[in-house]
Amino acid sequence: MPIRYGICGSNRLSPLTSIGISPSFLVKATNTYPAIDGPGNILDEPTTSELKNVPTFDLSLTVQVGVSCNLGKYKFQSYLELQQGLINQTDTDFFENSQIHHQGISLNFAIKHTI
Amino acid sequence: MFTPSPEFYSQTVNPIIGDESFLETYGKLPNDKTDNEVRVKTHLKYVEEMLRYKDISHLSLELQAKRMQLLDLLHEYHQRGKFPENRSTTGIRKPCFIDDSGTICAIGYLIEQSADRDMAEALNSEFQYEEIFNMNSPILEKWIVENGFSKEQIAIIQPTYENWFPQPSRNSIGLRSGLMYSSISNKNFLDDVEPVFGFVGGFSLDHSTGRRSYFSIDFLYSNMGFSSPIIFTDELGAS
Image (cartoon, each protein chain N blue to C red):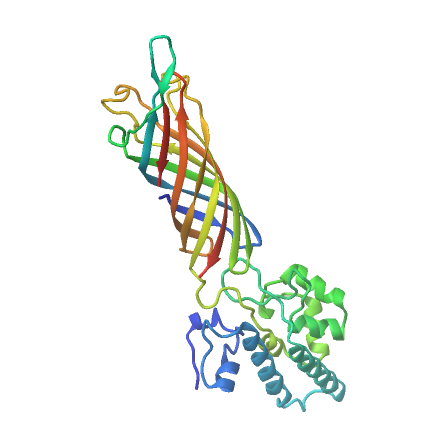
């Protein structure tokens, strides 16, 4: 749920930029671990839920840069969004002493309607 | 008598007489639901009639004739009903001499018809969104005098055009989707974890806090996974 403060011009074609924070919640996490016999044959690939074993909350910084095409009550936007996780995604069962953060970059398209 | 506050004039159809035309014609002030074209047309019609009944006996017959000719042109202009769009970024109603698509304002039209388009274009290049009283142009002053008007009368004719009146539409709702390239930090520790592409999508709500600034909150779902042939295969879904 990114919450951002941004600036976007009102000309027909305007740059847009925003900065914010993005709390996120893990709703699904699975681990598929192959069961292997002595000779190395894969017997099965059971999938188990890891939701209880990993952090279910992350907070990241987010920055958007893009353009907005403003046509009356509609805006068509295209932008790049960068995310840097702030919370360590490891715990006592899972690489406790390492700092691992999520990073992401996404290319987005959006259509917005003024109400 | 109608005596509006100074703030009122920043969003009225004319900086001199405000929305007097609308009030006199409809018995009430316009609001944010009032069609901009109706406001401009009402104003121009009102001003045309007002100027026709002015005592101009002090003017020469030639100037009286020129003045009447311009008022006929003004009548023709507002009957045609094609007005420029104010695309300035000021957030308030402003005059617009000639808009980006070439549509000309009332004063511009009078100049175009009585002098030539070049003069209107020249004034537009220097004073596109200016009010008449702020246009310090000798050619404009000369044109006004030569047609039997005063600068104040021309300023009274000049309408402002809708920008955001009286308040901008402050909220918007939208859909967004995209592709996400996702990775993790500390690759020295997990050097065999490959970055992956994922999907992100959802809807967003924006609330404008000014002409250009806004707050936004998105409700998104993203799906991504980190995989390792040695350690684990993992799929994560977050919202």
